[in-house]
Image (cartoon, rainbow, N blue to C red):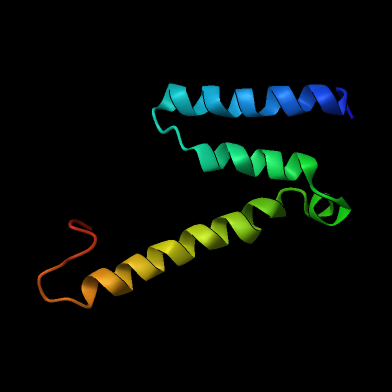
Amino acid sequence: AFIPHWLSVAITPSIAIMAMTVIGVVHPPATATCLIFLFAGDQIKELGWLFLAMPTLTGCLLLILVGLIFNNSFPNRKYPMFW
C-alpha cells in the first residue's frame, strides 16, 4: 500500500466528493462505494477494478432497465423523453 489504511479512508471519499463536485454530479452513494471497497474483506479487494462492474455497474443497468419497463408500460408515460 502506498499510504496507511487510516489515511486512505479519509482521502479517498474526499477525492471522490471533490471530483463529483467539479463535474457537477454529486451522488453520495458513489462515495459510499469507495468506502465499501476500503472496508471490504479480501474477496472484494481481489476483484479490483471488477468491483466497478459487479455490483456497481450491474446495479445501475438494472435500475435503468426497471425504469424503462415501468415507465413505458403506461400509455401516458414515455421514458426516456429523447433518445
